[in-house]
Length: 341
Image (tube, rainbow, N blue to C red):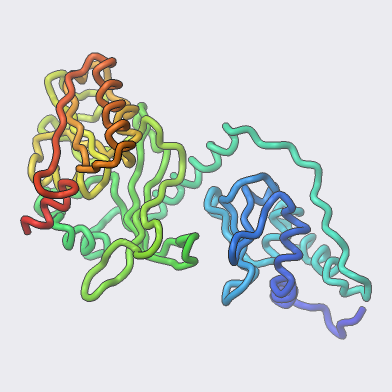
């Protein structure tokens, strides 16, 4: 043995990190290098991008899987990929791969893999999305989220209560930038009211307040939210969506800030956030709902107009009366509220 004493796990992790791109190519050949990261579908070596490994910089050798919440150093990666998380077995494999016996690094051959089904992948993402939501703090008062919303003209105290769908995460990784940021977390519910996906709005400090994380995609979702919605406000009846009164109109908006702005102005309305323009039509509603108000952004792009028309037609086909609400002299209702303030 070349070492007078056995290396520690930290020593091996550091050595592996120095050769991390070679290790990734050996462990995860289905992945690919993308800028400063090695991206792949998971530790099972499937195609995709939910798992990323830092190839350089201060975090070289560190990795995280956004679909499962797993993370760690290079030795943890070896353990997760080849030894079902067994660090003792990974320790021995790492020494062999690094050539501590005096030989050249031994290749780590990937085991035969079976392609997981789409159902398996969705279940994994949904489980992580729920775990992420539950990890977040339920109270927004005195957090960066409350400050961010207040600076957008949304004072949650004026609503009388905080929407239960919203939570606060103090330190959430943002894959594209490699930063860890505060974030507004929102639960997206399916037809049965169960959690199906989680929406994240990443924040950064600016001056004396908080704004959306700049120069990147600050709003992201994990999990398939098609047909789901963020149930922000129950309106005058206060009943769950499944028990909505037949004569109660349901307003569906695209973004959280837009929907909260409308809730401040019209608290009598039941308000759902569709998360995206393409989901305005598919949002599930109980059969007894007969009127839908679509809060449309003033987006003049042809694709936006087409998507809105499809949403209108989908609700009409379901037997509902459809009305369109638009902000005056602003891109959306939150901009209108901000300008008014």
